Length: 117
Image (cartoon, rainbow, N blue to C red; front, side, top):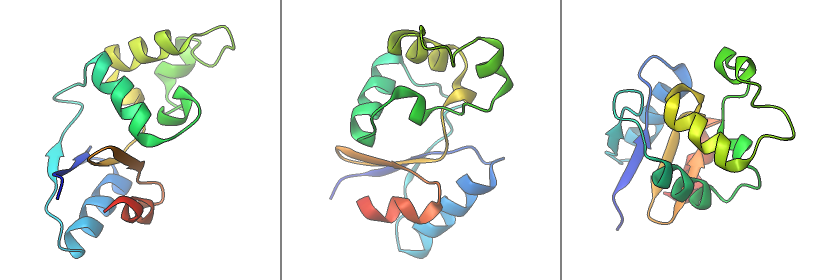
């Protein structure tokens, strides 16, 4: 069995709910507080591929002030620039994310992560 991990922000209610849900299902994940231990660009690219989503923006908090102020919603912004922005501002990464081997899911709603555990 793969090590299950969660990109977690303890201040986020959805992140806390997702962590509790995992524990209720007998899973003690590795907790990665990504705001304290930011991901590298390559880790973000790998995560994007595991999420099985179509656009990089789908893994971003597009309502964050930093997203809007940086103009990241413009059509001209490349995926490369979006990954760079998440490296610079980890709070732009949608949370929580549960990772199990080569699969990952965003915990919105928290029950979505149960698909991969």
